[in-house]
Image 1 (cartoon, rainbow, N blue to C red):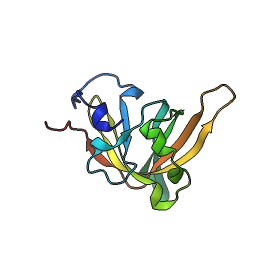
Image 2: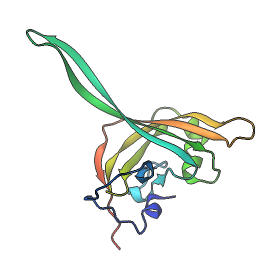
Image 3: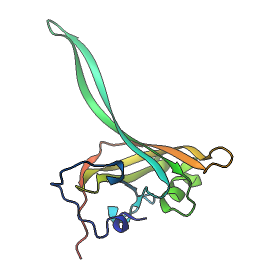
Image 4: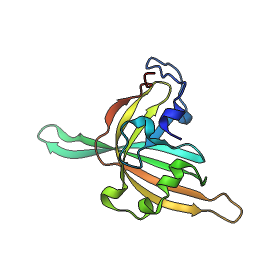
Length: 166
């Protein structure tokens, strides 16, 4: 499903107040690397059981005279864990589990993404390195599953989803 299809008929409200659920968070990736706008990015949805975003701060410690040890934050990296039950024919799963991504290296596995709250439209955009860890795993009689870790390669930029103008 394309981002434009998911958001059709939805108008985020930056002033929304209330609880958000994991289902309100949208992760969409441009697997082609050629999309003109995020509306054509492919959304993680069908069969996805987990889409966990994590932030990891990098720090540096130094000890100063009369102050002692001081920790300075030097950066933050973003990562996602995406896993679920394999659904053949889903554009997101077919793309992330394609041979070229599973066995690709370097620039071939780096793709543009957006991640935002569909209630507020607020989030981020950047580029991710995709590492598929499991493909079609599971026990006898279970649904086949997959998992991948997606790690930012650049500092994400602020992103605000805006509906296309008619």
